[in-house]
Image (cartoon, rainbow over all chains, first blue to last red; front, side, top):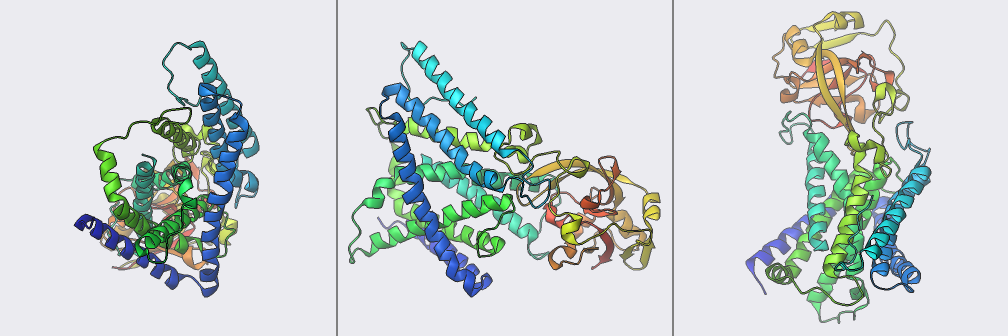
Length: 146
Length: 351
């Protein structure tokens, strides 16, 4: 259990983390130091108690009547819609509020709708191809975006 | 499998971030080569790309270990387990926050009550540290996994391979939909990127406008001064009458966007020769803008002597736009955009 590699890795890790902590203590005001842990805790809460249950819940709700390959394709498509939407949210919120006209100059609402439509369309196409190709050996979630 | 790729993304993000940090640290802390000219463009593009791709990887990793969140809490005697859980808490919270503030910084949006740059840098060390501890704890498991691949799960659910394919697809998807801000060929599909190539004055994006910097257009009384062995002063027309050189160099911003451009102006090394200074001099660049952080920058000797480094007067075939630094700006290879000082009116030879 106690190999030299593990000890070295762990020691380096602890040293790096302490160095980071020291940098924080040096460069942040007391006020910022008090609020940073709240944001760190918030990040965990959002991941573990909002995002993951949401993914599991929505995935179950929307695919519970589906089986086999159809369910797998639907789940993958939903995941791609979800992850791209998550990243698009800040862009959508800040649309038109860039620091200057060259920041956030796209029409993000239009682009987001096109992206999601393309993902769903790709999912439907893959599903149709798989159904037509029913004799082929089934490999789950071999989906490619258009 | 997902953990491995997340680890690679985090490491790539950390190393490219360190490079950017040292580029902007006090001059002379670390020797930065002036070639290859597009090095910073590549590393910083990679920094932002690996950060964005890490988002689906992190979420997938958290999802695969989700049941462990509800595992029995370790007893008070189980110090090792408590420490391990704590290191994972540090890793997850710091990485999630780091990716969040990093992405919002590319939008220049700062809704949090702590300074971005310092926090982003310190958290990076904490994340890599916690990751190394996590690797140390899991090393026997990882080693066993490398030696023999476990049989795929059966049934209706996702197999390991299927899950990995799905997550890799998600990473590729968000990567392709955002990398166009650094790779202009993919600009049209960069629907998840805050920047779009070829948008802005003279077809080039801007980070800090003249208005942000409190700079107004220089008039006929504008003079450029270089302080070397002797002090020389030029009007704009006199600068235009000096031998002009051309450089094809990118503006590569710390926020990850970048774009190549054609610059024309006077080589810094030619100006140094005229002022009687050695071409390998350290040079302080002074801007018309007053704000401390951007008002001056320093060109280390290897940058000042590089023939690509210009006091640029023209961009893409016409005089510099005011937002690109009219009448004159610095453009040098392999440098963050924030050090390509605009509205330059003075060069001081330091050594």
